[in-house]
Image (cartoon, rainbow, N blue to C red; front, side):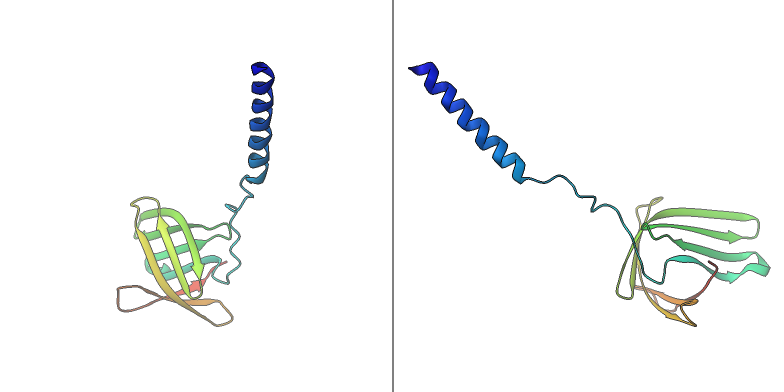
Length: 129
C-alpha cells in the first residue's frame, strides 16, 4: 500500500531529522568575554597639569575607551580589545583601525609601558584605577 509506505518513509525522515538536530548545539555563550589580565583598568599618560594627556580604559568585558585631552578639547573613542601574552590588540570603532601594541608592567602592575607595532618609541602609562 503506497500510503502506508509514504507514512513510514515520512516518519523515518522525521526521526532522522530530529536525531541530527539534537546533535547540533546552540551557542553556549562563548561570546561572553572576561579578561583577567592585569592590564584591566584605567591608565593615564601625558601632562595633566598642562591639559595635555590621554586616558585608556580597558574593561574586563573586552571593551576599551580612550580620551585624549588637548587644552580644552577632548577626543574620545571606543572599541574592543584582546590580550594575548604581552600583546594588546585594539579594534577602534570610529575608524575601523586596529592597533597592536606590546606592553610590560612594572611597579606592582601600576605602570605600563607600551610600544605600538611598527613604530619606534614607547609610552608610559600610570594606573588611575
